[in-house]
Length: 268
Image 1: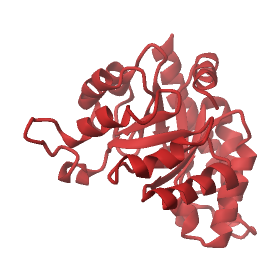
Image 2: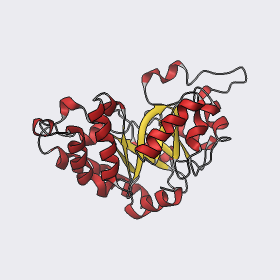
Image 3: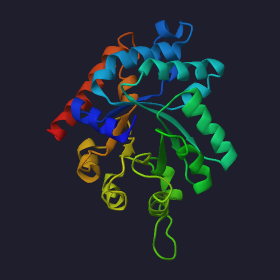
């Protein structure tokens, strides 16, 4: 999906919600766990229930890789089931030396056919460029994350006062463009979005942490929105595990609908 297609989807549906497909096997209803591929069957019902209220889906690959071959099959079948109507993100947080990154890119872009993959920038440009070499695909680079441990490194200041997350934003814009690169910025630090917007005014930001992690949607939009909206707000557990009973898909639909309605009001 191109940038223009993503922006058009946001404008036409009046939502910039991304649903995180991170199914916890312990929270999947017993009736689904009995099926041949419970992760896929769970995702299928979530997608059917939420597709009208979101523009993107983001499976975190750890929930699938932990299940072995069956999990990888579910990841692939989930991508196929979503189709081309929604932006797809393989949340894999990869990043390694060039030839290894090339294989990761091949796996997620060619075999699994995802539109984008999350990438860790710590090893520098040669660990990211192999992902950017694929036409019509996106790198979503970790910039400022929402977890507590982000303080360990991401706010480290060099002698000139530049913090590590600022260095990532400034340097990486020499590698890609706003047509093939986005940034991960956690919703639990909305006040930092203003600083990040100043450094990357035209880039999309993938913002996890709204919902179960406590991020505030209005604050994120106030500080992070640009002329193209420029935000994909991700919610995972708060939507897909809104219920652990057999009505989980309808509960997910209502949870996604509530967030989408807030987004509609913000965009109106």
